Length: 250
Image (tube, rainbow, N blue to C red; front, top):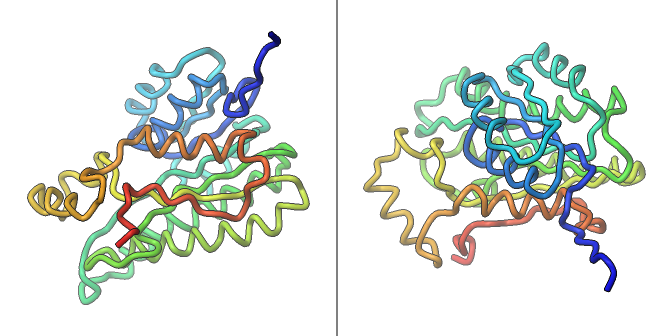
């Protein structure tokens, strides 16, 4: 029997993961490395990014400290990163407050990182011709892009904009043989949801709205992203994969 080619393997692929210092980004990097990818990881926290780098399987990975909220940080990342087969735009932030209490700086902060930064990252890599033909781009959006929870409007709007941008990207980059997709996770057990404006009691109550009775794990989102990065999804572009434990069934 000959060797079976697994389309989910990432051997000989170079994958850039932003927001890789924790949560979903770290899980994506770790799981990609297990499948043979060379990972380029980036984030702002040097200590936590090093922890991710230490957790990766295999060799040849690269860590780049960059503040992607600033144009200089995006240029630094694009200049230092080699040609890639895939980009996972995962960095994200949350500000939770009612509409009546929004401040202009809240909007700038959340949209700057969640929406504008991924758009400018893709622009920078395209300008430098650093995305290979046959490559794949995945944006980490959110189930909040298609649902409404009081106090979450800035975050949800930023992710809805990102999801829509993904479709335009897919249309423009299809002729270059570059695929563009998104994942829309429900609530995931990361540092992002704990210690914030929502109490642990409210989080426990919210879990009851999920048919599977719990929030997701970072690696469960990573597996969906890996599908979209890998050759297993070679005929998939312009789509958003909802991974939310059944929350959207309601």
